[in-house]
Image (tube, rainbow, N blue to C red; front, side):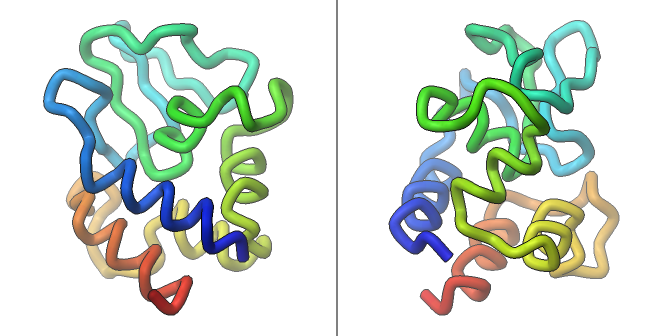
Length: 119
């Protein structure tokens, strides 16, 4: 696990600006026209009003210059965090809680990252 990048992600999620992309676990990235984005190559250059993203999506939007420009957002974000396939699934699919994906809060996502990393 890449603890430095886990901490960077925690810091990012804790300080999401109100005017920036919202936190929402339903989809990797959803742009203003409700178009879902799964692949790095399809990420908008600049998020527009109404953009929302999950943990992996926020990593892809914030740290895109450090990630591969092809492949899935899930793979890119998982590699950035140094996660195993099982850890990726657990984190990105919201298996750390019994809540529905759209009910998971950013604070719960941060807590899951901290627990996974032993922080």
